[in-house]
Length: 221
Length: 344
Image (tube, rainbow over all chains, first blue to last red; front, side, top):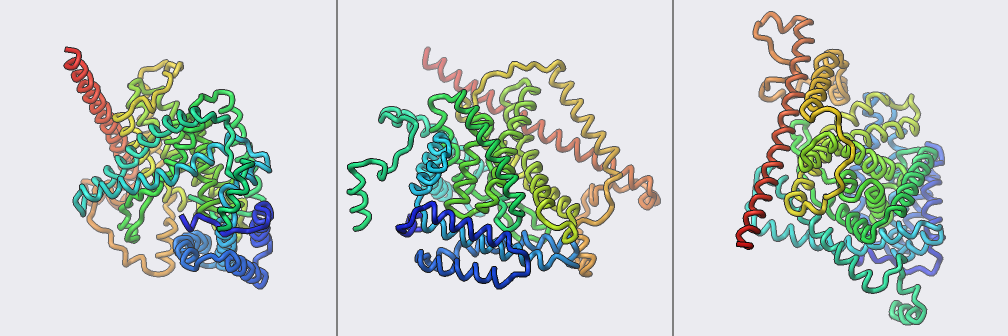
């Protein structure tokens, strides 16, 4: 869970979200050809990641997945012209995509989930959406672990290599079983929420007065 | 299908974002009106399930395209709509897209509106519309549910690909790239991806129907088709065959994107055609050697190949649906016999 636990920061989350969006908008709106400006944005982002103490392995793993995808998208434009033109546009798209991706990665490092919810609430996002978002985030990791256990069990009980059709069938059954378990769990979650007096509003530990100082002291430890 | 930032112009992102906010806002309003007690928990859990379900990769056998290994995964728009209905389904997929962008940097922050529009709104609203129509046309509930989900899944993937091309067309200078060619490439690739999505969604829905049919139970549609099921299926098949017979021969004979590049770069001759299948190059070889070069036979053979392909797909879909129905009947009979033996 370390990579989902952001670095602590004293500034308001709204400023951090605003900074991230400002960098992305600047990268997208500055015309193609102003490469020094784009280079400066990359340098700023590099510094921001250094202050956020982002591990290089964290950046590397994500860039390894993202860059090939971005490259394929960018190259599709000159490809559509038979590589006669569109090279500069492809470079611009790759550069802008990289800047935006690094900015979004920085945001995930410096804004916690609870801060994100508080920020959304300040922008008057409907409570129904926030409740669903909180529940999804809470149970995402539960279902993820359940899926991993099911995959391990399946791997232990089946023989490799299997024909493609058999693998597809097994994967579909795996997801189907996960669906059945998830929806059964949803019933239980709803019952327990009602038993605890759920009134439709999600609360974090920071919202609860007496525990606030305790929570902060625990975070300082 | 997740669009990163940098691909779409800021004004296109803003327009798509406004459309998404309106659509998701409308979904929230409609859901508030008809909210059941357990909807919030169910929607949240479904969103988490779709996110987790996307971690399961399916190997796609496209080695013949020269790509060694490609894997796809569930997108889940139609599945969410089938499980929750269009309003809660739209919210669930919106949450998935938002979590992917905000917590895992998958998809752009500014392009989030476009991603929500392409996947959550088109995937659930459009998908649910198609699913409902198909389900109402087929009397057998189980078969209708599965076939509706399959057809809707394929169509929503195609619609999302087309919408992306439209957004790209408004974002990029037309002199810099050939929109028509990008469009044909996107539609070609996504027609294959859509088949994968349709098979996965159909498989999951049929599995859920056999294991827990109560999860997919909804009120019977009040709409009653005026024609019988057989007449509707036959009419649909006739329309599809007509399109294949009369429009296929007039399709563009220009090479596709890959062939054009291969020709311009001079490696088209390295292509290995592989074993000669019956419908190679979408044509049927003539029984007489002299006919193969004739232009009229080339058109007729394309028509025949298109009709044969359409008929094959229709028969395969029919057999798939029949097998699901017979499996469900067997399950129901075994459950009935067990309950009878217990009561005895």
